[in-house]
Amino acid sequence: MRAELQRVLFVGFLAAFSPWTLATLAQQPEVPVKVVQIMGLTGVKNKTGGKLTVDGGNLHFVHGAAKVDVATASMEDVVTGADSQRIIHGTLGSIGLMAAPYGSGRFLSLFRSKLDTLTVKYRDADGGLHGVIFMMPVGKAEVIKKELLAQGAHTTAPEEAADAGASSPAAKEQKQ
Image 1: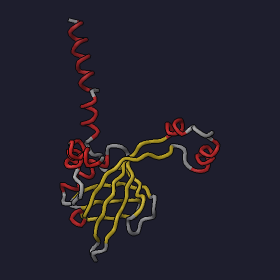
Image 2 (image 1 turned 90 degrees about the horizontal axis):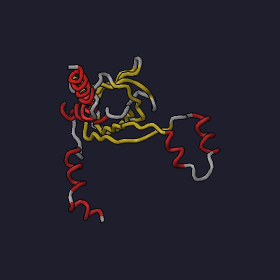
Image 3 (image 1 turned 90 degrees about the vertical axis):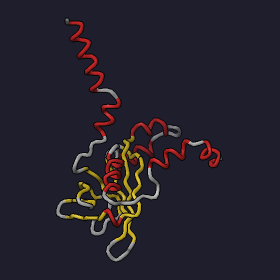
Image 4 (image 1 turned 60 degrees about the horizontal axis):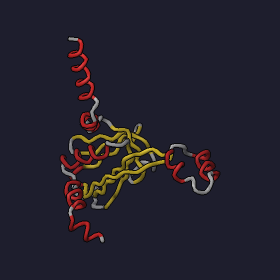
């Protein structure tokens, strides 16, 4: 009886913490998502932190009293990407990079944190073209992109087509 209980608990533990379960849980959007607006929103300073939500056909960015809405129907292109940033910022980080001996690049690359980027190209009410870049935790950009596309935004490179084209033999020959 005790061996069966241990076996059930072990299988339950494996199921709860398997990579597929964790990946599924990571895709659940947390509303709102903490982001940094790198540049592009009218009336918001560059590198401003705030919260991003997608609701009612709009992309909402809120920072304190500043609130900016962009209609998903006006979005011409939504692109996600992966990037990294230094963990140690400011003067201390710059001095550390300058003081590092030649050839220490691999070691210094260990002190970087990964993040996602979301770039949105949209038109304002007057037809003017704008672009905005958001930086957010890993795994959040793709979820927001899917929400935007579901609510009427457009993209020039859907992920499914890009993944299928990159793995085909014709695409590999074309790159060479």
